[in-house]
Length: 323
Image (spheres, rainbow, N blue to C red):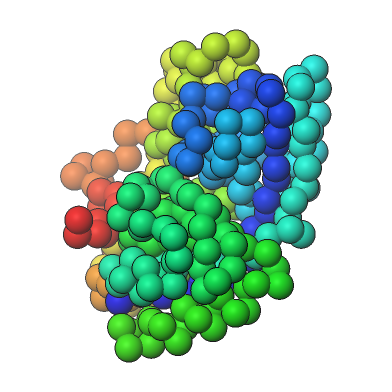
């Protein structure tokens, strides 16, 4: 049906001005100046050595106005990095986290629940990774068809004082359709089933986007230089040092973050995320494996509390929503 999430812990960084797009092109690995107003893009901010400082969603609210969404623990790093990297550009960078609350409604029934409350908005006209200003339950909001759950849904950015009435209106309006409030543990299993990386698990300063299979977010063909370009180009040329893979556990035991992956009894990688899959009914995990590790050629297992538990190499994502 649908889940209702409070994501107000996320960071919001406003970048505005005539050269806001150019500043973000230099600061991030994506081509944000090519983004049309009302659209969004998944991207990353990297260090000079190519290591990932955070993965981000960037919205272009207007011609000269962008909103960068950072993971909560990385907000200060992203803000200070974008601020430093915007030097020399006609752009203002502001930590706007305190100006926003964020309520997300995700799932197959999300559009039907939100529509009666979204005054003046045609939700059908909002495409995936796009957004528009409007009202939700009578309160002004930026409504975006984005999310990190592997399902259709919307994220509602509003003033902090409007978050409770918007939440209560959605909860009440969606009760008959099966809407339930969902916490961060539920969100973690959703993004894991969808094969989506989590910063601090699959992404971090010791790895580049290429290790996570996300090299496509690095836009080498955009105009001008950007931070980390040289290191990322070298990694793109040489190939990743390890690869992110899906694992299905052949028992009821859970492979947790940091557990070793073994090929024929020898260490060949490390689990980054693991949980029971409510949708699939079996434990699943993602892990970084050494190049050449192949489930057809090796007996794969995860070391769980001293036991070698068999696993099956599984293509990501584990789950794809029906469209």
